[in-house]
Image (cartoon, rainbow, N blue to C red; front, side, top):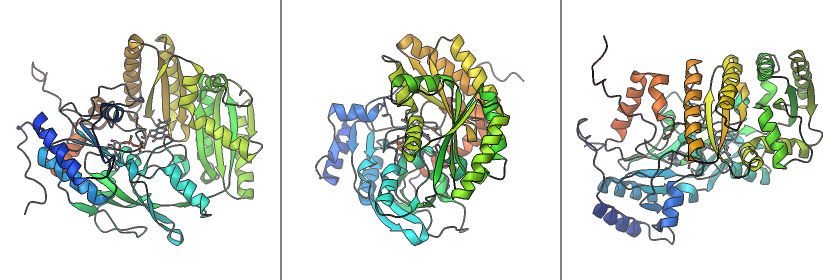
Length: 495
Ligand SMILES: Cc1cc2nc3c(=O)[nH]c(=O)nc-3n(C[C@H](O)[C@H](O)[C@H](O)COP(=O)(O)OP(=O)(O)OC[C@H]3O[C@@H](n4cnc5c(N)ncnc54)[C@H](O)[C@@H]3O)c2cc1C
């Protein structure tokens, strides 16, 4: 028996459903999911699910939006997608930034997982939790807090993001300095529906396992191209008291050198987050009017320290001494818990502040990551480039990881084109510094073209081989992640 359908020969074009077959597939979806609102085809829903206001890459509306409530529903949908050769795009929190959930031009099923948001089991003694993949990270942490369980899930991407999407993009966030990124240590076990309709679990609930290679990892950063994640066992971390501080610097270089020394100090394990906000970002926060009192407009580091009182005291002293040594003009702790929370919210809502500070503009957010020591050069050259291009921008970075985001503003198509070119130059600058085209947002449509330059043709081909083996008809989120093969030069190789 073939576990997977026989793959088409490589030279055969993958053929998707015709308009008539799409109609039949939608009828079959309606029969399989008879619940109210389970299948939607109204133009508004198709459009809002097919396009994202966070992305300016080419897109199409989906043909149908389906809302499963359990793994069995997902199996039915995947089987219909395969029967009619209709592409299927998982969609969850819809906060991704590179066109990840856009519709396919030949017609596609949008699998809206956001209704599968239940927490199924909390195992406090084992510090883990089982949930459906549409659960939001913020709701999970709020539920644990409400129940008085002193545990939390530390990966913190955009507000509204869900566990399935976070696995799909290989996300991280401000906590990555202390807790790392969306890797299999945080996802103990996944239930996934493969393109052939098979339901698999990648592991059991044990904290660790050496039973073969790590198939959980296969789905992390796969952007819905290898299967649909329906349930997840998350590892949780103990809630630890934190304190928030900020330090201003004359320039990014000095700020980054301070961070390097702090993270190499014996108190590094008490540093939960280190965020960089450039002078433009600080100005935007002030102008947006979301703060009680204006902040100094300088390159600024926000720190979150963690530990019991003596550890925080020692870590604070170390941080204070090191930032001073590296030229910090000012170092302050938030005076109250509320002030600490406000300070952190300002960082989390950088995009909103950037837009609110310049009414009438839209914003293209991009992310790259380089070795931390290369970050000052990257920031310096990028700021100069954006200034020369006449583009307004702010910069925020998870500086402890060498990860930074440029939030570039534009008003019209002409400026949008200039932004696209500036992003292109930024990505090449990051790769030239031994970095990556995306530290956490993922590839989607927007970063596909950079993968071969960054990883090499061999590594990209390995990804394609895995994709073809699991999804031979290229039905799972086609058009994302994998770059098209480079055509041989028409004039032939030069040597
Ligand atoms: C204001 C703002 C701030 C942000 N800050 C950060 C940050 O600090 N760090 C960071 O990493 N990102 C950040 N992001 C980006 C975004 O939040 C992350 O990429 C997040 O992980 C996406 O989750 P989602 O649920 O919204 O996924 P979606 O956008 O719904 O989907 C993302 C990808 O995962 C796939 N997918 C979704 N569900 C499933 C599933 N069940 N099974 C298989 N595949 C699935 C989709 O097809 C798609 O390819 C930010 C975004 C915004 C708007």
